[in-house]
Image 1: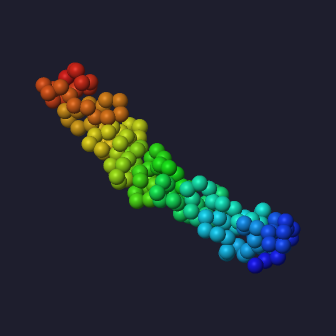
Image 2 (image 1 turned 60 degrees about the horizontal axis):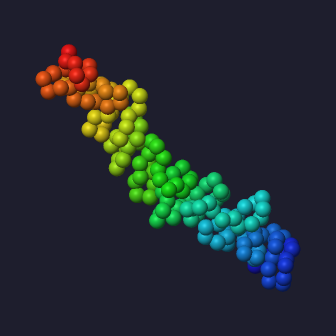
Image 3 (image 1 turned 180 degrees about the horizontal axis):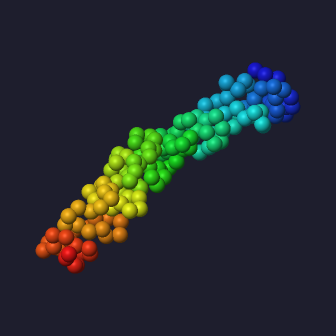
Length: 154
């Protein structure tokens, strides 16, 4: 155990000479408790952000509490952000032209501009018998082989 620089009692340090302060004790950086990281500025073992079970800074998580959080870009989130989907305990990026996806990178829920949602895919044009309805492909009336809107045959 390291030496106290200042203390409130013989057994409780307030700051350390060269080690890191953790729960009133001076310890080496490698002995900071699980869920904390050694902060060189304050010379203390600092608690990782909420949901983060291992980290190297407040901005760099390496593991999450998997009961409530998913891992994405060195953060622990309660849900995956737009443009990603949950895969195990991490968020993975959707493949273009999916804008939002689920289950896999290519199972689209919505599409990028100039593509149209059709059966969880995003074609650039709608197939025969369908028309481009804002952001999805919609069926023409049964009597139409082709249409520009749902109510007018071409």
